Length: 205
Ligand SMILES: C[S@@+](CC[C@H](N)C(=O)[O-])C[C@H]1O[C@@H](n2cnc3c(N)ncnc32)[C@H](O)[C@@H]1O
Image 1 (cartoon, rainbow, N blue to C red):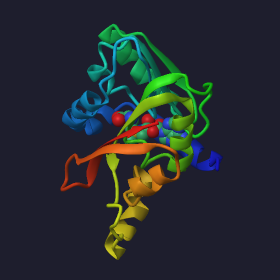
Image 2: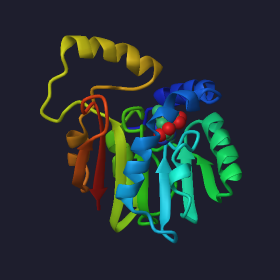
Image 3: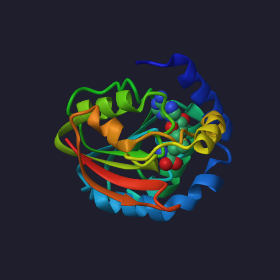
Image 4: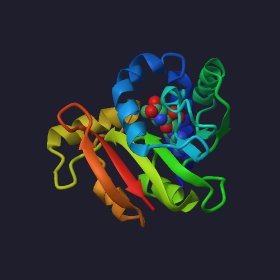
């Protein structure tokens, strides 16, 4: 389902966050490196970064020659383009809704989903689109915060979520449920900080 109002809100708030986003999200360099090592992108593969933000992942994708980055926020993508230029990387950057990717089926070898499934209004719609644009056998790496699949959100956690959703991110989504709504298979899942609150997972088409 498309959520134009929430997407409009995301565009506005991330345009606002863009100038100082790196000071907050820069702390996840270790997790980004680990996630992209697990993805094992090859130099000639077509790689898509969905909800790419300011491009903090680009530092770890240096050997990749066919990078595409999309985001709903032009402000975040402008920062990404600056970073790509300073790294000497050619990146096709496009403002686009991650729930409605403007690519044909099977265009990409691998997709990076870092800190976006907990932000995008409909993570299932996003992951189904990712599945569609992946080649058979294509890989996805996810790094984000999730509620454990078998876990129950406490009243405190649900209350805190009302605030975190407004300013940043949903903390009560279950990766297992999101993946189960697609044809993708989870091949790897590991804790990635804060006692397993953050996770890194690999999916395959
Ligand atoms: C927490 S930031 C993560 C940015 C980047 N992936 C990173 O790891 O630093 C979430 C990003 O998702 C983007 N976003 C939110 N809704 C989106 C949508 N519907 N389609 C594409 N990008 C979206 C935001 O603009 C923002 O750049």
